[in-house]
Amino acid sequence: MHPMLNIAVKAARRAGSIIERAAVSGVALEVRAKRTNDFVTQVDRAAEQAVIEVVRKAYPDHAILAEESGELPGAQAEYCWVIDPLDGTTNFIHGFPQYCVSIAIQQNGKPVHAVVYDPSKNELFTASRGRGAYLNDRRIRVTRCRRLEDALVGTGFPFRELSRLEQYMAQLGRVMGSSVGVRRAGAAALDLAYVAAGRLDAFWEMGLSPWDMAAGALLIAEAGGLVGDFSGESGYLESGDIAASTPKVFTQLLQALE
Image (cartoon, rainbow, N blue to C red; front, side, top):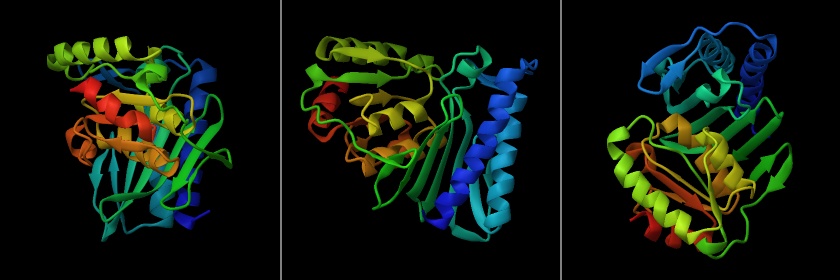
């Protein structure tokens, strides 16, 4: 395992232990709305601080982009750690066990290492560019699904951008009519990891942030899948709109999202 990936795993597990201790202890959560339907708790902040402490100790000069702390500059800007300490906060608040820690390491703007850790199931998804994707040290691949009509598709509602709900509902209708089913679990980073692991054949969502996508996108690429924006291009981290699937399904998915 690459030394940077090893540090990312250490940081993700430390954050995950904080999250799970809070989940099983029944501690009262201090919930604050950052904006409509977008929440943060003291657990998000504690988990993020734990990740940052691990990263800063190992790589004090690296930059950090974290959901709660924002941009933290580093002297060596070649590397940036993109961190979501608790993707699926609303699920976590309600005791719905579908949430994760997501960490991506970018080199000159391109993801080179990725970790998505589900502490409730103790599932660790990892990838390094050119070295494949893994779930708990077992190599994973996207499915061999060739047709959208045979695909199980994940999605996420545009809860931050309700102005785009009409566009999303049109997409949802077309995908539902063209696939075997659509699932919405509420943690985009984990949904993307599920595509990489073959649990979903495809996924799409709009209005996401870079920390929701960066790690999961690398997992899918290293597992043999395709990732892009709704035009199939590489600008999903900038636009916030992402589509991902097996290679044969990708064009069909994009056509359904037009």
